[in-house]
Image (tube, rainbow, N blue to C red; front, top):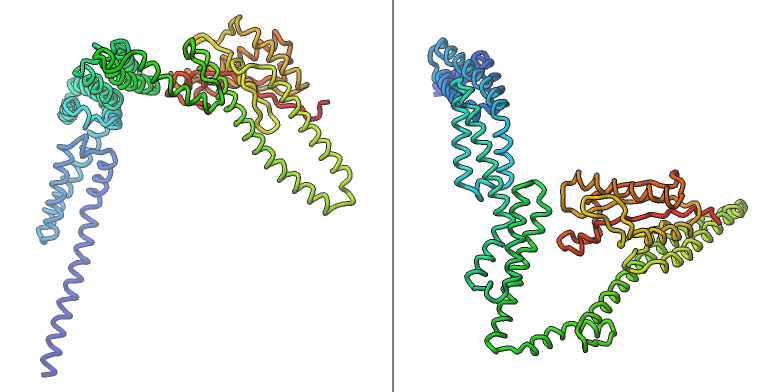
Length: 488
């Protein structure tokens, strides 16, 4: 019995060794016969031959799998070698063809990617499918060696991909407003609020035109579409109010009195007398000025709080270090006192300059030891950088403000809103800053070494670019005055 068991174990061990040897031998054969095919396949994959040379690549994969299956089944070695060699040849052809296709179809490939980024497959499905058919056909022609007709298909595919991209971009920005305007037309809003509804339609048409002219600078068309959306909703609201007035559900007097209530509530917050005996204009102006002053005061207080916090921390640290050294601290204490006096002088000078300008001319604020003049009253013609004569009086005040800070360093910063291309806005902001710089040199006789002109384009907004008022605040010239703390 023992001898029989030993024989069985010996047979099993022999079979295992034979199988292991066979597996090892098969791995060696695979490395030998598939080395070139694997390298050729990797090269084909690197240039996306599966997409750009599908016929040759598919043939290569078919021969590759046939060779691998033959090796696994223990078929004739020459048969395996032949199939692997055929696979290598097909993969090399596919790689060469794909590289050519990527070059020939470079324009349609880029347009295809741009369209995909704009979600054209889901938002412009029909046009996208038509473009893909042209693209695939171009690839097929390249595999046949017909480059002339392939290039024609490339032009067709590029045009369709770009059309699909534009449709998709418009869908993202304009479809919501289009639907809103369609709802307004069905509700006969034009009968009751034609001015507001037509304004919404004009804004939508402007957004559409802007996208046609420059689809990649979406700031302006997006803003126009948002304004159109607002005006469409506003028209729906107004039409309901007008309808109620026409149907005698609401008298004109009741309507006006109802609209005066919000102004009265705001006047109460501002502690202003809500005098609207001759209309709301005077009260509105008073409230605007009040809230402008409140905003400026809040900003000033926040700046002072931040500066004081930093200043106190720095002073406490310096005084602690000086107290530890004691003996050699006399000169350092004197320097510290001198610096504190200089900072106090800057605060006094700041208050003096702050009183020079109205809220419609400039906003004066501080950042650290620097004083900023935000020249809200300094305007330029659209796309221009020339200083207009009506700005001379404001610039004369700027000169007096600068004189308050002897030997200070001056930086003129140009800024734009977000409408228009980035490069154009950068160039325009720099030109406007340099225009102010040149005016200071020529008219104010300020030495050029004290002046730096820098354009920041649209990169440093101080208000929302989604509203006309916000964009107006972003189109500005800021003058940074860095006082000389050693000046008396």
